[in-house]
Image (cartoon, one colour):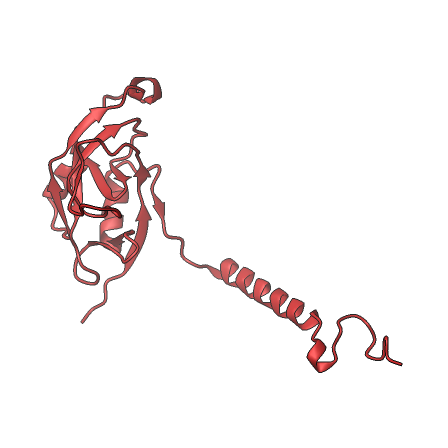
Length: 186
């Protein structure tokens, strides 16, 4: 079996689950949305957004996805209303596009999109390349890979902690820190 490579991503965050959002759970914690309503306060312009625990796409991205073979999601209808402060917050010169619910239903190592145990969105490398080449993602955060500098920094921190631990007093073995071993002995 070939293992897929995934990246954890954090899309542009929009706030405002609307009052008509319905959850499967009847008591907190509410995790599973069955009907989505967004009361939009602002939009920074990305084609992929998150309004926890849901993901939203623009009409542009919806059409691109419909013409590709990526899997692990379903496009669902949702209600969008504009918050009373939307006009004040919104600073783009382009009109607000139609928005759609991107419901994530994929499984790890099978599909192109899936949610991990922490409800973080993971996408295949192919899907990420597709997104970067075709849509606006100015506010997308991509899981950072470790590089040589990060590894060196981690090693230096570990060595510094080990050095600190070595210098700490160990009274049960007679080490009192920086004092000579025979200090305060009569």
